[in-house]
Length: 152
Image 1 (cartoon, one colour):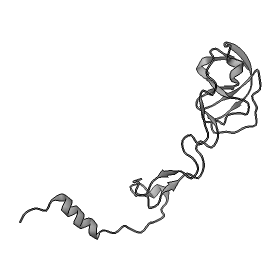
Image 2 (image 1 turned 135 degrees about the vertical axis):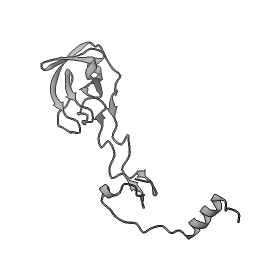
Image 3 (image 1 turned 45 degrees about the vertical axis):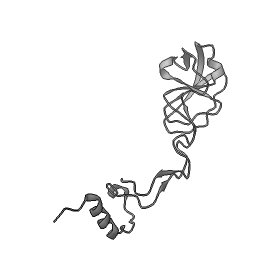
Image 4 (image 1 turned 90 degrees about the horizontal axis):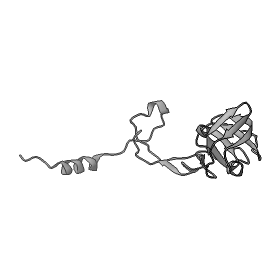
């Protein structure tokens, strides 16, 4: 008796196979399972314009002639959104992932600064818009993130 080619055997087996009914399981029990329906983003990610690194949110026109000293008006932690506004002559200490404050258009990396009390010296100018992640840059609301059949 000759052996059946692998592809023929596979075709015969799959002709009789039926998908299992979808199940809802807790995420912790989903390891090794496959998605029965697509997973779509429920919101933009990131949900707001945010800092791509630790540093200072500034107005690019203030740092064009660096080195320059600016008054630090506050701090913004990673993931947080605040009400602080950056105006001429000021900077806001900002962590990676924090929402960009109103008025600011650039983030100067902390490595290009020197701080003393409530004053930060910007040692080197950076391009306008640098180090800012735009809202929805990773994924947009409604966009398919994982497709049917994706193994978890």
